[in-house]
Length: 79
Image (cartoon, rainbow, N blue to C red; front, side):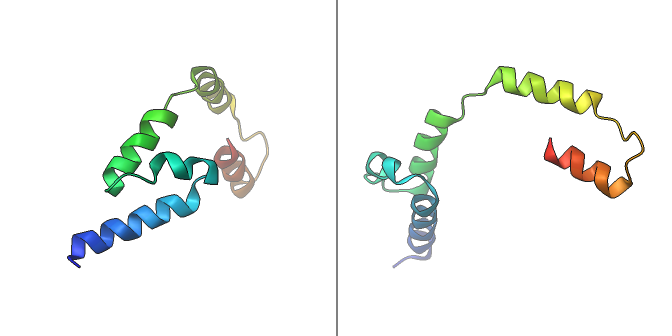
């Protein structure tokens, strides 16, 4: 087996192992990890603009307000 084929197989196996089992049938026919990824990306990469807008507002209004740096950092990372 050529090295790129082995790597492709490993990546395909990884993708299949982390996605919802319901999706397995729709990507099981593809030959390369790139085609598999493009297929999934086309279906699920649609931005939720209202959620993005709300996150931007939350980030812009986030203030330390007496929190320790570690707590504030955790708060930011939670957003």
